[in-house]
Amino acid sequence: MTRETAKVSAEGHPLGFAQHDHSTCMNDALAAADARCEEDGLRFTPVRRKVLEILLQDHRALGAYAILDKLREDGFGSQPPIAYRALDFLVANGLAHKIERLNAFIACADTNHAHTPAFMICRLCNAVAEELSSSARNALHEVARATGFKIERTIIEAEGICPSCINKTES
Amino acid sequence: MTRETAKVSAEGHPLGFAQHDHSTCMNDALAAADARCEEDGLRFTPVRRKVLEILLQDHRALGAYAILDKLREDGFGSQPPIAYRALDFLVANGLAHKIERLNAFIACADTNHAHTPAFMICRLCNAVAEELSSSARNALHEVARATGFKIERTIIEAEGICPSCINKTES
DNA sequence: AGACGAAATGTAATAACATGACAAGAGAGA
DNA sequence: TCTCTCTTGTCATGTTATTACATTTCGTCT
Image 1 (cartoon, rainbow over the protein chains, first blue to last red):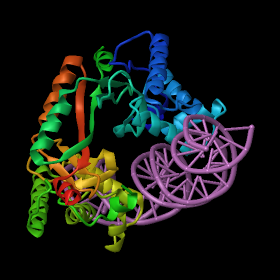
Image 2: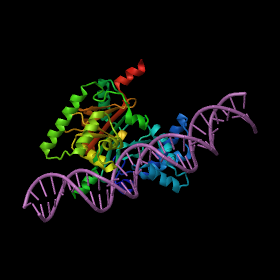
Image 3: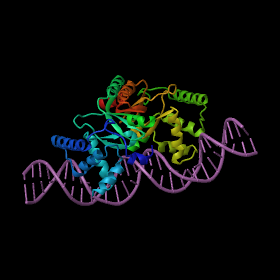
Image 4: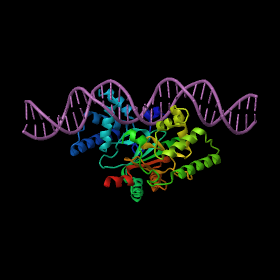
């Protein structure tokens, strides 16, 4: 996987590797974010909203600098901290996630619950699926409890090939 | 956690957060690596061996540039690819692991088995414990199978506070 | 409304992490 | 020895992330 394809890959079905109504999903997510920020007294400022829009629009993991490019196009500031601060806010409040394997960010697929999901990353099409229930996290917590380690955050990512890419290579 | 402490932190008990006989553990690991490379027809060259020694010596996660500094001190080349190539070799052959959360590398704590362990990362002392059995990985594989996703690599890391740092903050 | 403190933003500079490209050297087998 | 492959040395560059500080915006108190 080159860095280039990581940034501009044109394929894949990120939301659980399944097709969906994109404009609806975007509007819903933004509305949910509005409601959530309102409720929690968070300031959902223009940059923050814009970054979330960008992430939702692309619907895949995006590097901070890719986001920064889009911000610039839309007349926002273009220095790295602009993007990183907005991303910090979104991640801190569960509206987006960081994919450590890719050093990239993705909009949260389920704003309704606080969660630390698992991710499945396709190395061919760069689609990223968010796995919400994740029994893996529970398993990890059990191990930690046995060790006396206090978990504050879990990072669970699987890298491999998504169903749709498996089909393509088989044919 | 600053980048500085990440590089030179002086405390912590990385091997499962437990104390151990360090020189023995280092010699054993190097001997095991020698044997393993011999067996598999791998070229365990001086740079590669040196990088493994550095990782074993520090016994914690080390960034590529920290390793590079030590290589330079020992008369090896000092350009980034020197370190990255050796690290690639070690990681590819299970002699070291990359901690994605830290963009850093750590010597493998159990060279005898091929494995993809889980890691517990203390954000106070930067100790990293390797968890070998990891039922979390099994759970992840089950989820993937249900989805039709083909896992090639798993990344399971927990960030939090290790037992010894919990004790310190309590007192 | 005016003053104040906290939070957020704008901007420059720099640090930290990682790869590409190509030349030169070392080892294994014909 | 020739040659092919793997490894190393080196320069250059690309990518990701933070520090520091000035400025603005926003809520709140009076």
